[in-house]
Length: 343
Image (cartoon, rainbow, N blue to C red):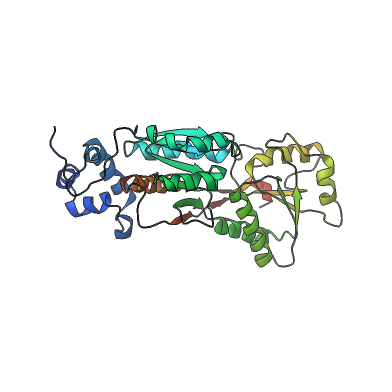
């Protein structure tokens, strides 16, 4: 057998103190204010030197041989711009600590998937449940097995879990303040009938913030149907919102995949954006900057979210999902102002 890797060996390799390396490897780096870049370097070198491949007499956590050193992310659809964009950042974050990354798709109503939870250990060191994939049955199954997992862009109010998500309240406040600055008074929120818990939270917060900040404004809501994808809206769906008494000045779109159908519908009606109707999206989407009139939208900090996800799931793996703390980490989005809002 090769020589057992010690903390001081890693410290010498990196030119750092043994105390600092110990704090990182024992998941105490955040509370001591150690930079993320330093933590990533320590974890990457520790992994390369084989620190995590054995159990020491002091009980150092190992990654069992039956695992492949791969983190799996479970999603309900690959058509979500958020899933596609954050996957690149997650892959880089895991590569920096020498761990692989893979994506699995799951139909929320498919009970066969839930029965397969037991087999995850053979393929994945840990699991990220994204959005609707974090249903209560799957979460409870993983907890029963002490399986390392975290939740991304969702939460279950009844359970204490490790969650990373965009701060919906902050994002709603940014949108409401911008609307108030532009002095729009008649506002319509467009959403689909079947929406994710994250979108529900977004909508709830934006309603509250507009009511609180945009004095004298009226907020209406248009629900456009059950389909997952749209090419355009029915004329009748928009008609009553565009004419008196509502006479909408601004449309807020709850999800990125509704923006292009909305623009197509408005164009077919010869309604100009933003001259006749302003548009703001609560999510970023593909090509929003490339349009003739770029879309004003909230943009999630994908790099920051991926970094936090990687560190939290790594901590769960090292602690065999028995860590003392469960926490929800919220990361602030930014408001990207384009021409679509009339600014």
